Amino acid sequence: MRVAIGCDHGGIDLKNTVISVLKELGHDVDDQGCNSTDSVDYPNFAKSVSSLVNDGKCDCGILICGTGIGMSMAANRVPGIRAALCNEMFSAKMSREHNDANILCLGARVIGPGLAAEIVKTWMTSEFAGGRHQRRIDMF
Ligand code: RB5
Image 1 (cartoon, rainbow, N blue to C red):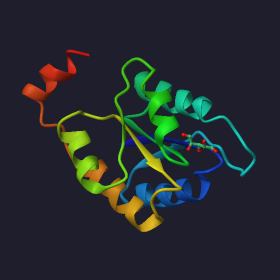
Image 2: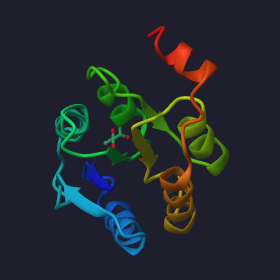
Image 3: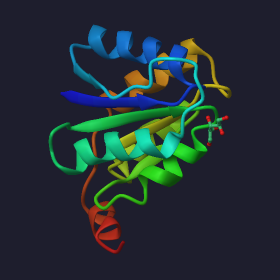
């Protein structure tokens, strides 16, 4: 799959970890930045990644900020985006199976690289269950 990824200044180290994990899994990565620790505004990166996903240029996206909260709020304002903030694996699995999440948000100041890697692996390998869950998604 082609995965768009973005972060703010709080998420750079974790973004690099996640990029390594994605490449190990055989995915192509479209890195939208940022790439320095200078303070930036996370909505810009949420919009870039969300647009790539909504336009079909990427299959899914991953956004990382300090908590993951701002990224998830901003991404969910973009039409067609179902962004899920998952800082543990059960939510990561369910966000794919029940919510067909197309963007995963992570909090770099909340979780460490080991847990983040497992969350990404779980999220990338879980599949949407469809059925009643599709009906519910169609309601919003
Ligand atoms: C940046 O300091 C911080 O606000 C941001 O990374 C994120 O946690 C916002 O939700």
